[in-house]
Image (cartoon, rainbow, N blue to C red):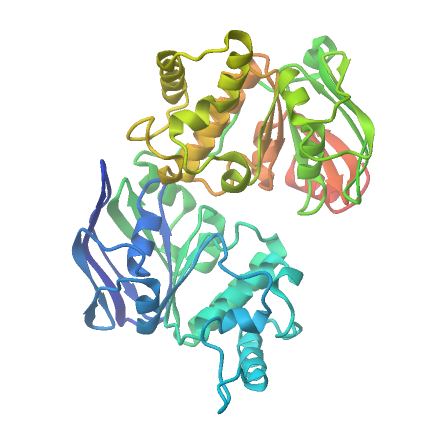
Length: 506
């Protein structure tokens, strides 16, 4: 890694109406380093990256890139300088080929002005080799490759524009552990070629694995820059949250044999089958229990939740809630019987992005209230929304704020508030802490613990092993759509859970 400074962020401030997202931020990035940016949701990470990549203009301050002051007005201008950003939601066109995506709007032309397919594929082949996609044909449609390969295509696209400074926002959020290792190998190869990377992730163990230095932001302010090799995760977290970090989350009480002997079964799932995804899955959920559904990507966890909730069709099987079978197999019936679902796709499945925070919170509750009264008092709606805003500590300038402008953690708490307002018996949480910071995670853990203590039953899907072990009373483990075993909290550890996730029967 060079000692040369390739980028200086100098006194950057960015204000939006009612919010100061960045306040006099200063730090340097060295050429050829992997420089991680960490902070809680709302710390200003994405705002800063959008300024560097030309999406936003700073209110004040300047960017010095390769010794010159720059002020890109759009991503295309940043790209011309050698700065590119790969967003968490990939920007590839699924109906175009890999090569067409890499050179989108820049495809080589023949002397006749036609697309030179031979050169297009040859240039794409060279770039794909650089990012480890030697087995992918450049003519393959993007929709026919997996998430990890799409991420690699995004990197190839950036390299095709002679990128020297690559910004990566949560690049591993949709990747398996093996795919993450592949990405890290690619990043190290790019680093060896002198390419600088800014890396944003909430997965702190990954940051410790791949980065050279770490800059911490908190509430829009620069806090410190750390050398990764000289840093502990607990040090990083303490700087992020502004207080001493005491370790992982532990619930006040976990259900034991005596509790289960007295507990009331609230839901039974019998021989559930979902086409090509779930096979004869059966389990019982008890009142006040936190039940985990664990498994590798593609094991069928989400499909079980969606089918039980009526969002996806089931081929066969029974769902019995509080002694009554759900026969209509739709979401309305599930809600009527006291079920709620916080889906995995927060933005695609859970939120009405152009609606306000209040509207996103009250939409299910209002639907139930309309049936009873026919009319809604605006004051009552506002009062209820304010109650849950305070209860779940949703950080927002106002309830009228568009939900799209909130951080991921506050968006997630808004969706949870929506269902709590409806007073559920059972709450399904699909990846409840995905893409949110450590502080917001602990707040959601506390909410789950409080729900269980109040008698609400929770079924949780999480890809984080420690989350399953620390939160769940029992863990039902799936492998290729089948249950391989069920583990109680006092027997759960990484080895026992991983063995079942890998297909070994209990």
